[in-house]
Amino acid sequence: MVGELGLSDREVKRAGVLEELACGRLRQRCASELLGVSPRQVKRLVSAYRRYGPASVRSKKRGQPSNRRYADTLREQVLALEAERYQGFGPTLLAEYLAHEHAIVLSVETLRQWLIQAGRWKAKSKRKNVHRPRDRRPRFGELVQID
Image (cartoon, rainbow, N blue to C red; front, side, top):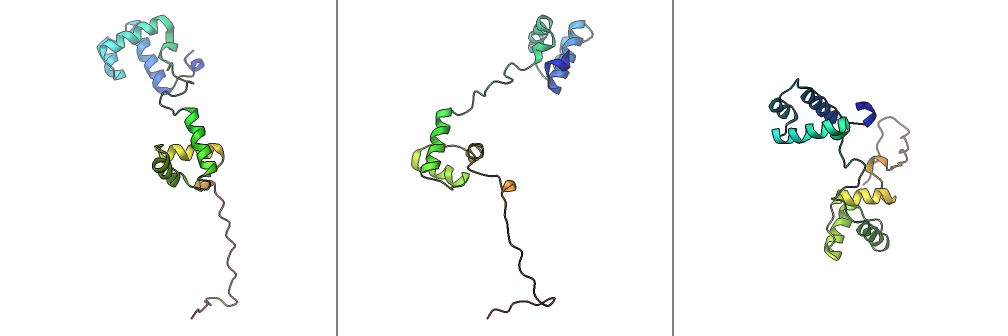
């Protein structure tokens, strides 16, 4: 049943400890040390485990957007500014200009991710640097002398 819920390794371990505690094979103090939480938290966890089973240890925020994410309107505003005024800027320079000119302070990594998702920036590993190989000299070891 645990595999069907899509639990992480940490959640599977937590469910196992709570099962042992619910069956009486483990003491509350020992369970709190194994889980790294206080005995009071263990009491709360085991009551939820008894009520809902292994599903109680699964994170309730899984699949939900983060509370710390930036608003979509800010993202659209930044991408519009980049398109009209700062086209071709890299994430670092764009972050500096947004902070200085528009008082929009964002991390370089956030801007880089937004630009990649919008298709306006490629990671260095994805860029194609096509260099034509240099012409070989007629004789081995010959160099061009420029004076």
